[in-house]
Length: 395
Image 1 (cartoon, rainbow, N blue to C red):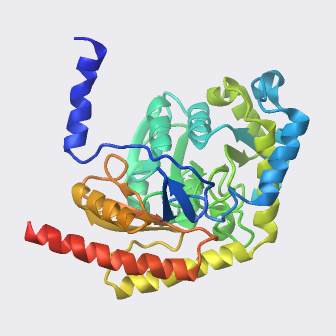
Image 2: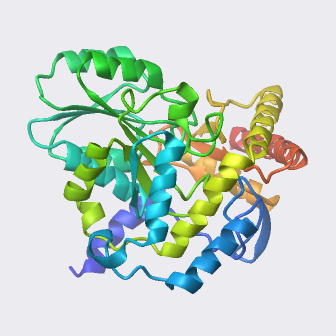
Image 3: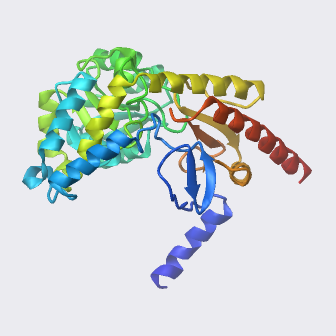
């Protein structure tokens, strides 16, 4: 058989199981009101939590830097692509997160892959939360270390697994804020456990950075964890920061180790300098415009109160990620489609992204949303879910 004949059955199987994914065509800037596939929607599915992706100051910084540095960086950081914009951003990220140094990566996936595979290998042990992001799980599997997954946020289960290892290097890896559930890892308990067991703690703070903490520095700041307690901190720049890329922050020795041994860092072209300049502008906004996090918290509280009044099943989350678990894949898809017909854009998240039987509507909020838009969401959700429930019951 040729390649198409070989691959086609797996696609047909995925489609029949209501798990087929399709891309939507965004034709406007990332903001609450968007144009997708030629139609206007009120969107609750972006990770632009602070509303910075289309901020005029961020746009201006990118444009000005492009005039100076051009577009492409032209080389990897270790050859000739490490510009003064990259270097300044690394210094500012280190200061912001309270760490000695920071290192830029082109994506969060590459940051996780680079850090984990550089730090552990054969003969070592890695322990990951069962609900960790796919990039963390992939990195753990590819590292060559003995890979174990502990029950979600279960410190006792993790301790039992640590008791059974004799590995010299032990790495504990968790999301700071879990991307599909919106809840936080118990980082103070995990930090204490790591120190007690002579293990290292790594946190992927993709969804906490910018949103949590007094100044927005993320989960480490929210829980008051020092570099010693949380030695490996990863954050992404394409979510709350409204830009692109990722970073690892930590000690001087950690960062130098990654520069020397993290293959996804060594063997890839540096992000455009103008993107780094845009991120520097967004970092300044994050630190000075505290109202964005305050307004976001008000939106989340208002939504949770309204959802509870409607009897909707919410998860234990105070983050901008507010999932409604539906369960059945086809039902979640149907609700998402009917919401779209009413002008509300929310994506149905299905396996393998989430466990089988836990398909959900992943609702996310931005500081650009208004209370009135949240009320509109609640009203439409109530109508659509009720209509779908009656339709399913009738069938």
